[in-house]
Image (tube, rainbow, N blue to C red; front, top):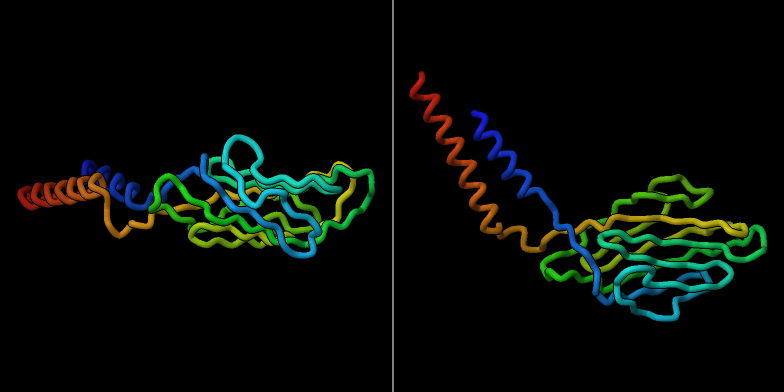
Length: 190
């Protein structure tokens, strides 16, 4: 295959394989905490913008911050008491919609995790639906001023991936034309 055909083929493959990079800014998101954790957020919905969307200040603060295509869940022990056990809990976020209604959640990639007594990667169980995220955090022991965070990139994809966009169709046509031209050129030389 010639250089032109290789370049065009690479562009076509990159365009087809790319997933949507969406943002939740301006979206109203639902949030809930369940389990023996002993706390809940004062509001069950929040509008995604700059800063923390969900926050509960008790002996141990729990916050959730959506930023672009990431979610950071944080625990902070703001007490003076050593060795507080912060119960296991399930954090559920719902109605995560993007400006493009064809975009849906395909998974989460753990970017950072500094929770103690847990393996670094994959220690907190997280699952997704097309517009929801559920995070199960195990029992955590904390001391004054401990700050624990887990950050995920929200992976998304366009729901109408079976119908290619006009640009992708044009690129695929150019790639096929380049391959055909290169083969014809090789056949004439032989």
